[in-house]
Image (cartoon, rainbow, N blue to C red; front, top):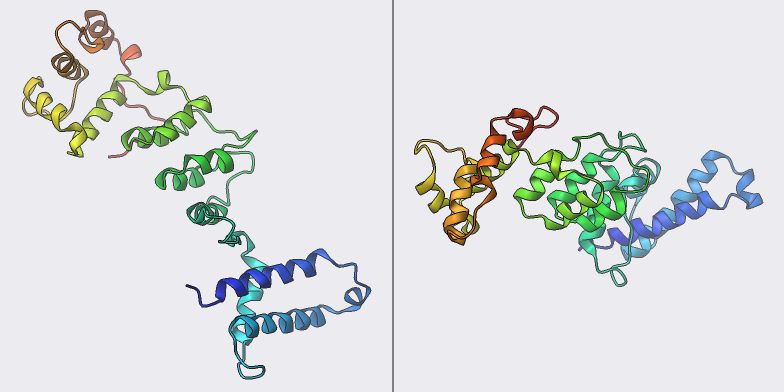
Length: 261
């Protein structure tokens, strides 16, 4: 689909790094920088001619050669080269290329949150595990809260599992405020998964004008769905007692991350 351009870039990179990696040739050591540049340019022009199938001397590839020089000198981190006949994970390679340029200003020992956002958006927990959550990567408490919220909202189970494996604390995260916001935001989506819950909640909610889901109301809906023999946690008296204690219920909106919506 690239008209041979991808092949040109791949072979050009191979030639370029061979030049860089093999400075032991005595003839190369005697070359000036201008001579090295001219020799590499001639090689790149030959590569363009070969892959674009043009007769020798018929086309001027000076613009293409200059572009290749710029790419190899300044943008190698943006290039991901692979063989499509041997590697079938094209999406993975494209994501890896995106990751290489994301969050380049992040401290090497810190978790790259910009890269994590890309992986979560594209639902690739496998790449996040292999490329981002590396050994000795550090992050502050609360850094992953926004990502966990998104993972829960979008049913990204693999990411929820990954965050828990990395030591994320659901106990600290799932305050009453967060739970109620999760229920409320899910109902706003009006998808088929929550249709029955929405109908029951509208019937059992405490205030008809309220658009905010309360855990007591969730408990009532669960009891209707499961049956009278089951006593949901949210309707138990000791749980209601805890709701009166802000330290337990987490009624105050957390200040360490910005919730969506």
